[in-house]
Amino acid sequence: MYKFIWIVFLSVFLAGCTGTNEPEPVLPVTVEFGLEPEEVKAREITTIRVQVMQGDKPVLDAQEVEFEIWKEGQEKHDMVEAEHQGDGVYSMKERFHEPGRYFVIYHVTARDMHVMQQVEIPVTGEEEKPQVEEPQADPSSQHHHHHHGVTIHFMAEQGAKAKQPQRLMAHLMKEGQPIEGARVQFEYWLGSGPNHVYVDAAEIKPGEYRAEIVPEESGNYQVITHVEKGELHEHQENSFVVD
Image (cartoon, helix red, strand yellow):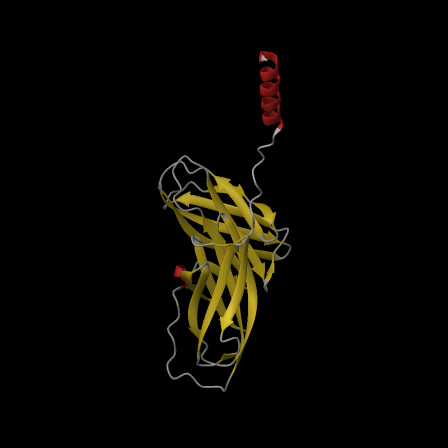
């Protein structure tokens, strides 16, 4: 009798040992873009929205959802942060003051993933001469750089601690397409200090470049993203905080 019980116990134990505990694959974050109304008319309010999902579940805690908007031929791009409306839907309201071809790039950062895509929006209606010239934004307040159709979107992890790994990331696009195969370096330094550190970034996926650094001290850091590819030489300065 005892021999039989021992054989049963041993069989169950071995079956448990042969089982696999491989972690489930991480599902990608997906984004669905939409307009309300779908036909956009000049001087009428349009809702620009995205629904952010991971698998079949809405993402309620996206770190960043921004819309980058400009009219064809304009150098100035407006960056607008979207608000979460519930069920993974993030939106903003926009009024296009004149007809023409507009473009929107949505920037979504969620679950340590970043998704960005350019969308063209045709705006219909009659021309109207603006009565008041809008003031120009201070270039030093911009976090995106645009030159010859190039967009550099820089990000640093929030809540970084001194002497702990900190990830820097840049997304590069030109005329709506990711810039692949570029040489990307992050140059960073603390405050107005003289010690500048350079680190090479690796391309994780088309147009997405990452590097890991270990800041020695807490404080406000400045960082310059350097981009080189053929005749393309671009750079952009940003900042990040280390606690």
